[in-house]
Structure formats: structure tokens, C-alpha cells
Length: 341
Image (tube, rainbow, N blue to C red; front, side, top):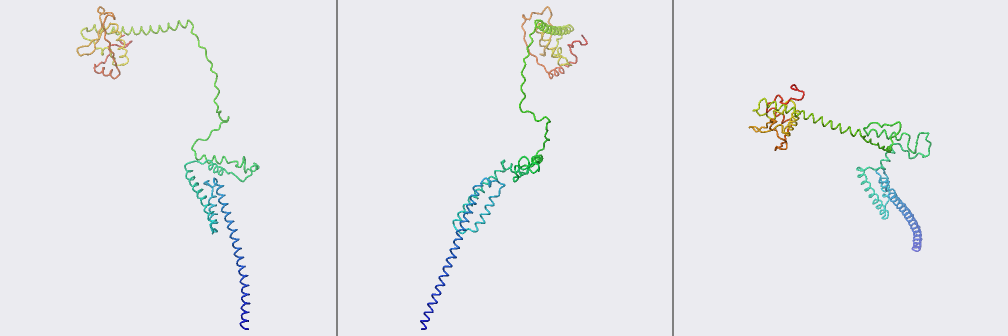
């Protein structure tokens, strides 16, 4: 009885234990399912956040490439927070995709920052200028201008004056000039019509007067030259009569020690004497040129004599050298209206 009782008691104990064990197993299975359902929903939410971050980076690419924008850093901070909850492969793949997109964007941003040191970005400069001028992006475009908060859009009244005062310190120039009558017109003035003046036709009397005046001038110049040639011929004959046996040096005769221009004029007028056969030139024993008059009985027509021409060049240096070499202190041909005239 006792075994039976014991057996029955053992069976009752086993039945009680089995019942209790079965209920405990069901509770454990329920807890596991609840945990699995929470992890699945959490993983879905985690993957959704990763996709949202990737989409944000792709959509705001140009804005994140700006050197003044810090959204890329914010995205990377959020990714680091999400990565602490990553335990499965699918979330790890999404995290790697986000890192690939962010790293490519960061590389391009770094390249732009290097190139911007050598170039000028108009949009960045405009943004900085508007910020410096006090641009109010939150103000209403149609707000009243009487309160002084914003006029002419979103800029305050003294926006341009503020920018001008800042730019003045960068340039060392004179202050600008403002004309009371406004700016000059950029268009050129109209051309005035050209009026052609009628040329005066010379009259018969004018035609007669002009050649007469020229003829008088030519005659007066010719007369002055002839008088000067005759005057020099008189000096030459006078010196020859004083000492017929002594040859007259050509340089001593024509050289004026006090005037280079008078020397040139003497050479010019003496050449007429030789051309007309009134004087002759020859070389003395020292092979120096001499000049002498031709007697009136021995004078021959210019066409009948055989002549040799030579060119004499003289400058102020050679004139001084000849004056010192021949020790000339007084001219043999005195200037017109001189003491001997």
C-alpha cells in the first residue's frame, strides 16, 4: 500500500510538476516572442532612420558642399548614435552605405575648399555680404516700412551705407564726386554738319601781283649776291696789287676768325668768282690751295676754259683748327658795313 500510495503520490507529484512545467514553458515562449517582436520593430525603425539619413545627404548635396554649412557633421553625429544600436547585418550594410555617401561628399567638399583659395565664389560672397548688411530672412516682405525694421525688401535702411563704410577702408582713393546736374551722358554728342567753305578764286590783279612780288624778291636776292661777289673780288684784286709775287692763301682769304657763318658765306661767294672765271685756284709749293684774280685781258669765257670741280666741307671744329693752324687774327674779307666799308 505504501509503494502503491507512494507510487500514487509520485504520480500525483509528477502530474503536478508536469502541469507546472508546461505553464512555465508557455510563459517563456511568450516572453521570447515579445522580445523578438520588439527587436524586429526596432530594427525596422533603425533601418528607416538610416534610409532617411542617406536620402537627406543625397537631396541636400549642394547645400552640404558649402564651406559654411555643417549639416554633414550633424548627419555623421546621428549615424554614430544609430550605430550603437546596430547588431544585425542588414543595419550594418545601411550604415556602410551612409558612410560611403558621406565620405564621398566630404572628399568633394575638401577639394572645393582647397580650390576656393584660388578662386572667387560669387554665391558665397553674396551670402556674406547680405549677412554683413543685416539681412533679415525672417521678416515679412510686406511689413510696414515705418517701423524702420526693413525697407526695400528684407534689408534695413542703412544696409548699403554699412557696406560702403566697410569697403572704404580697403581703398586708398579720393572721395567720389557727385555732380549737381547728374551723370554725363554716355552717348557721344551728335556730329555737326560740315560746312564747306567756298574757295576764293584769285582775280586777274592778284595773279599779276604775285609773280611781280616773287620776281622782285628774286631780283633783290640776286642783286645782293652780285654785290657781295663784286665786293669780294675787289678785296682779292686789292691784295694782289699790293704784292703780286706773293700767293694769297685760300684759307687765309676766306676765313673769318670771329664768325663761322661769315666764313661759310665767303666760301659761297668766292665760288661764283671761280665759276665765272674772275678768279683761279692753284696749289703752291707746300701743296696748299691759293687764290688769285684773273686779269681782265687773260679772262676767257666760261665755255672755253676747262675746269675741275671740287667740294669743300667745313664745320666748326675744322674752322677752329684752320684758324689756329694759320694763326689768323684778322679777316681779309671784312663783313659788310664794316670799318673799311
